Length: 417
Image (cartoon, rainbow, N blue to C red):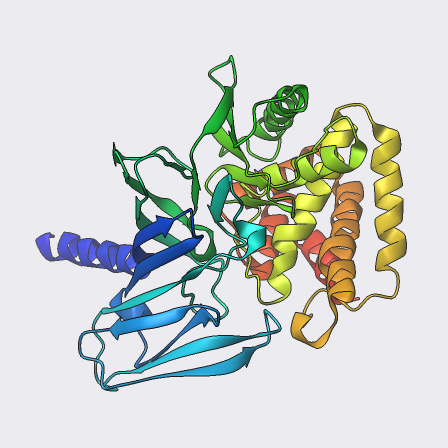
């Protein structure tokens, strides 16, 4: 009996080990006056995820100062075209002994300057769209556990997607779990803060540089309503308790991060306008829809799900006319587009990628919704979100569990058309 329990213990430990995340440790030093930064990035891979040949991508604009890795046999740096970004990257190639099956650690030290779209006189934005860290190719959305230490001049403040775990003048530490591309540090002399009056969900707006306006209060209220709807539908098994909205004012785009946060760079973001209301609902829902790979067709699990979730919010808010209008627009866009299953974004232009991953994916979800009805459809979404579903096959398994094998087969056919 003792041996039996020992075997179970060993099997359980092996399962835990196999699910271990990569670990990331970052020391970031910033000079906001010159837009310069220095970074020491350390990636730690568990034994079962540590190959004998390791490649890291780094933005070609940054200067590599050193690369360190215990037991490395060969290393070289060369530029190559990374098709996912349609751009040239610095490829950091590391070779280890083939028989070396141990965990591995790589530290890359580099420096550079942020371009104008991520740096103004008011703020430095190092976030999911800044492309400021080394990344494993095709694993941008891979979940990692991280520690981020940021050093800035004393007159500056630093915020991230979660509160600092340690803080003193000029020094900040943030820790958490998020996808590899999304470690975040916003640096400014002053952040204006607006927070929910209620404890659940707790929404906080952080605005860099300029004082808060009426538009920001409207943004806060709409965010609370969106999160309230999602918590009762999509996220009922994994609800949002806190959410951060960052307003850096860099006037570029809007995007979300897994760690309950979104960055909205537009300075005139008015949720009374349909376009902005839909954008906000889309980005908030990425709290649940951000586990599919960015580099292949599983990206529809991120973008189509977020797009259709925003449509569902409009319907729930009573704006059924806009719900139908958006869905009709996406149906027209999706007509004649390539199939979702097997779609290779590197072989098509960005417009086609949007038609397939955003629009066609949303139309397929709408068809599934119509087929199974509200109750089963929201059960499917809630289970998919709670399981942090990352592949289409895993999603099809959820559909089968909630709606039956026949619906799974029907959906797979839709995804191949």
